[in-house]
Every structure is written in C-alpha cells, then in structure tokens.
Image (cartoon, rainbow, N blue to C red; front, top):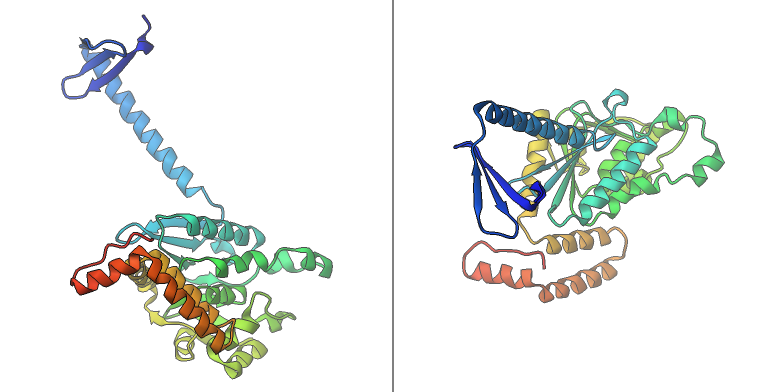
Length: 320
C-alpha cells in the first residue's frame, strides 16, 4: 500500500502525524523523533517564508511601469500609480499600453468600485516621451495607436479620481482630464506646453480644456504653453480640490470610499449621464438622462436605496 493512499495531517502541538487511509476510517498515529520534528518545523517555516517572499516579489514585479494596490475600507478601491520616476513618468508607448490594460482589467473586476490614479510626489506625468517621439515620421505617427491607447482611460465605466502631485504637463495634463475627478497637491502644476516644442496637443487638450475652463483660459494655456498652479487650476474649475501633497492620495481614497459605498451600477449610470453632457445638445442630454433615470427603476439597488431611506437605515446595495 503506497503512502499516496493516505491523507496526512501534522499536529504542531503534540508533534504527531495523523495518517488516514482514503478508503478506511482507521487512524494511525506516528510520533516522530525529536530531531525529525525539529527538522520538519524548520523546513516548514523556511518554505513558508520563501513562498511568501516569492509571492511579494511577483506582486511587485507584475507590472513594468505601474504600481497597483488595493485600498479602501472595504478593499474595493484600486490605487494605480505611474512608476517611471527616472523620466518623470513620461508617457512612453509601454506605459500607455500597460495603463490601458490594467484599467480595463480593473473595470471588469467586480470587487473594484472606484479607481485612484496617481504618480509620484514630484511628478504626476511630465508628458509624452520626447526621446521616443523625436525621430518619428508622419507615416509612423499616422499608423501608430497613439493616442487611442491613452484614450482608453476615458472609456472606463468605473469612476476614476486623478490625484495629481507635482507636474502634470502635456499628455500628463490630458491624462488627468480623462479622469472623472481631479484632486491636486498644493505644489502641483498643470500645463499644455506642446507649442514650445513645435507641435500641438494630441490627446484631447484642445477639446477637453475649453469645456472645463472656457475658451479664453484654454487658449491662453495652449497658445502660451505656460503652466498654472494648483490654486489657479481650482479657481478656473480644472480641479475639484487642493490638498497638502502628503495628504493628497489619502484624500482621494476617502472620496473613492464614499463613491464605493453607493450602488456600483447606479454610479456608473450617473457617470455616463454626466459625460453625455459634453457630447450632446441640452435637449438630447436631458432625454438621455431621463432614459437612464427610468432604467434605475428596474434595479434592485434603487428599491433597496429608497426602502432603506424610509426605514432610516443604511442600504445594502448588491450592484444589481
């Protein structure tokens, strides 16, 4: 009879192996020697530590240009950090593709309700990778997938909060505008300096910035290439709030937690409705809003939310 036919269990307190045959109910107790016991415990601990270390390394090395962590009171907020510090988080092709892939994956993950996108303490993203772009020809640019890969950020259904510390220039500023809410650290700076290097914005700044801050202010930023401070960005409506740099991500996660406490499907409908305001006329937008409002009456979460309100209790949303 082979050892494989037994189901074994080691009891660490009494140092005994319990072997149970898969076809019989009899139990055999083996008491190992003291040296064997010490060796078993030492080997088990060492193997566990090696396994734990390997798992952590795999998690850290999972992405080349990003750091991804799960945050929030209910572990349903994803914190995605641009991680190319030596180049000030410049948006190379590899980073853009990886970011699109990660965000699309998080968008499909039922455990994630909200996403926070951030960079480093000194730089959110300093724009496109100029070294990578410098020698590209017209044909190469036309045939490339830029900026479609970056625009994938704006197609994510779940809410995204940009937590911007330091520089958000060119593509970095455009990336922040693709998010739904922008929070800024008190030392952050925003700008579209493309004219300074002989080109124009290519990932939506000429279209989004006027919608956010008005034509005159957008023209000034784009035609001069000048930067604006976080305080000015809040004043003109580009960002929703300014916080101390060391508290920025924490504040973004707090807001993400608040969003995540609501019905996920209702939040996504609300986001879609607000975004429609930038794509349609007022009449068409109101019609679209009414349609999605009516849709919520087919949701269990809508009924639960209203029932909980009348019963003066916290709602238990299920995302349906």
